[in-house]
Structures are given as C-alpha cells and as structure tokens.
Image 1 (cartoon, helix red, strand yellow):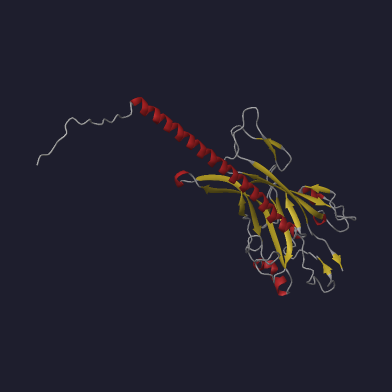
Image 2 (cartoon, helix red, strand yellow):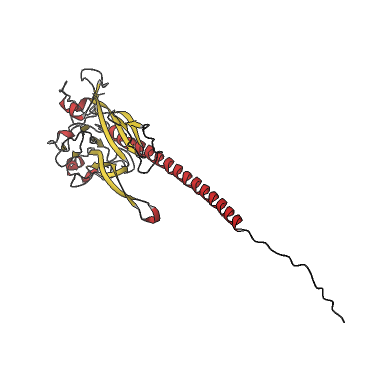
Length: 332
C-alpha cells in the first residue's frame, strides 16, 4: 500500500502587534482607567459629602430634641400628688428640695453664659466671651413610671435620681423625686476610620449632660452627640404683672439681674427658651472656594463668618423656641 504525502502546502503566518500599536492600546487603556478612577473618586466624594450633611442634620435635630424635651419639663410637679397638707389641689407646686444653699435649684430653670454649671458648687464657671452656654433644668418625676418612660425617676444619662441623697426625704414621704439635668458642650477627641485601618484623631465638641443620678455628684459632662461647635440659650421672661407671654429674650446674666416682681424673680418668670445649636462636619464636605469668592455662614450669635481659604468643612445652624412650664402655679 502506497501512502501519498503532499509537499509544498502553504504555511499560515501570524503577524504580532507593532510597537506603535502596543503604545496606542496602552495609552487608551490608561485613559479609560483614569476616567474610571476619576468617576469612582467623584462618586465617593459626593457620597461622603452627602453622609456628612446628613450627619450634621441629624446631630442638630437630635440635640434640639433632647434639650427641648427636658426644657418642656422645667418646673414640672405631678398635679395628681398633693404638694402639701394645706394646699392639696395646688398645681405645679415646684420647690427646692435638693439644696437650699444653691439658688440654681429654686426654680425649674437656670443658665450660665459662656461656661458650664458646676453641680458641686452650685455656681457657673467664669464666663468666657464666645464660649458655649449651659443650662440647668429641674423638675419632679413620677417615680412609679418605668425607666423607658419620659418623666420617670431617671436623669438624662438614665441614672436613677433615687441615688441623690437629697431625694431621701422625698422617698420617705412618698413624694415625687427631684430631677436636675445640666446640658453643655465638652471638648471631645475620637478616632475616625482612616486608610489601611490606621485611623486618625478628630477633635470636636459634643453635647454633654450631667445629671443628679450620680452619687456623689461631680463636674463631668458625659458626651452624647459629637460635632457641635456652639450652644447658645436666650430666655424669654414675662413682665410678671399679667400675661405669661415673654416680652424680651435675655442672656442668663441678664435674667439673674432682673428684679423680683410679685414674688417671682427673673428665672421664675421665664416661660420660653430660644436654643441655638451650631453643628460642624468632621470631614471635607464642600468644594474649595475660589479666591475672592469665599462663602459664609451665620453663627448662633448672629455674626456672619467667612470660611477660610481651603477650609472644606460645613457649618449649619439650628434654632428652636420651646415653651416651658417653669414655675407656673394655679389652683383648681
């Protein structure tokens, strides 16, 4: 058997890319990669900015809600419980059962300008111009309510006010317990997530609270919400001669200096409180301003502030006015 072998069959040749073609394709790939990276970084920057704006909105709202909820309790006394044997039907009979030596507890409200209230001395710290204010809110609680109910026997840090030795007489007599919450700002430093989990240190201020459920009481304000730059209170006091409506809004020092009218001092005549919270983002949020076109914001003291060149944080002011019970008495 003879096998036939074909000779001279054409050989297929493979031509590779030339050096120029390789360089062109590489350049195109780099351009596409850079465009994708730019789009990713832009999307991430936008997402970060939106998250930061959401955070300061939530911080401002929560801070006002927490302070306002307590302000609306200022001077409260449960009307269902007789305050004395001679006036069994007295409504809102607030009295200083905590410490008669501290005038800050003589009514449902007291404030400090530019400094914190010191619970151990019953006095305000030396005022510093432009520093955050603080407020003292006092009321009586219905101790039979549970810990999850507002107006129960717990302070702003969920500490039982039955721990306050000054409430011992109230407990023995079956009377409502005295609650005193103090709000102010505290310097806070925390570690934020960073590249490769290294973290970075962030310095800010936080809304802090100090309550009378701690025994012994101290001067520590426990941070609650961070990212608050300023806290300002203005107090609306009535004339004390008729209408309960506030006529003018005062600083804390001005309220203290008001004269006593019809047996009520300035603080006992406060029936509304204006609260301003200035929040600040802790990350870069804004696009950088062009020289000569710097943007501005209005702070809690009514001053217009211009952002510094290169500053990309964002400040936002939150205001609310609260009507309060403070020292409102009546007979039915």
